Length: 335
Image 1 (cartoon, rainbow, N blue to C red):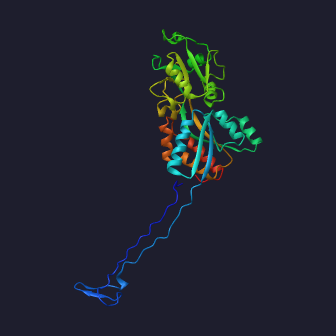
Image 2: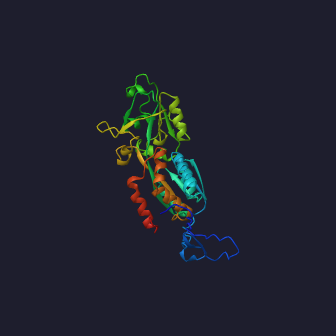
Image 3: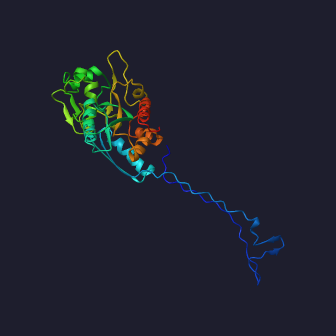
């Protein structure tokens, strides 16, 4: 698919104009000079070449409401801003966070055009949407390695899934139990329950067990990151796109006999070796068309969209693209 607006043809032309001779003669008559005869005879002029104006279809205009995952909000805003500035200036895209659950609820109620979610929609949510006349379709727009972040002064650099589970369920409460004698009490940070990251981490790492009594539940990823920056003894989970020099991402292994992998390495996430990795989703109501389809197709297929995904710290769609192609095929949409 080409993502361009109107293409105007160029009219090419060349004509040789004769200068009328001075005097009382008819200006249209030929005039002799030393080099031969030139003048009003148009038979030797280069004919004007006209190329018929060609237009591509106008880009779809309008506005889109996109809501959901707090982890994905920076990604969604980067994609939307690039699209509006460089691809389709007739489009208005509004991207807000609030959590994956917030976005999916808005989709169920048909209040948004696209729901962003860092977790897969649940079967009961699909059924509830159907009861409201909403036909849910799922697309993967990128991948995230959920980073378990600690303060840069924390000397611990790696943990197993089992150790992480013990920390977040409250079984282990002091860093000395993990080898950091001067670490003191562990300060645990989590997202709130409407977060897709909360659901994902609770299922994958904690095996759906409850968080420990001392866990602090924050409304957004940025709040967790800020807390970890300020508290040497803090730990929390954040989207890999939020990791910078102010926090450290632990390397994680499935168990003590397995290799440790960092979420900062694209290859670890793409291969599935990093054990806390996940896809990132767009959900639409019904078969996408018009502006939704144009924007979605750009996000899924265009190299500049992929560049925005990676610039915000996430990873390309990878093997999930085959699933996207299948959805397009099932809906009768040309890929």
